Length: 78
Image (cartoon, rainbow, N blue to C red):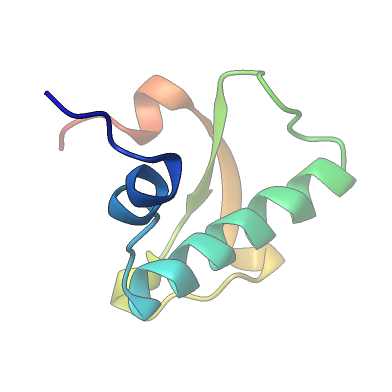
């Protein structure tokens, strides 16, 4: 089997998210930074930032719409 060049490998596996997904990810990162500045969460603490009204339902990344939840509670099947 021929070896694939590094450039071809990187091109094939580069991040290919839609603009909508990139925007949602940026909003989630913004919310986490807001709570990190307040000292409520830190990297690797096992906590998630929860949007009370989800972004996909028209929620915003304002302090009144975000809170901290445990990872298991935030990602549980409803």
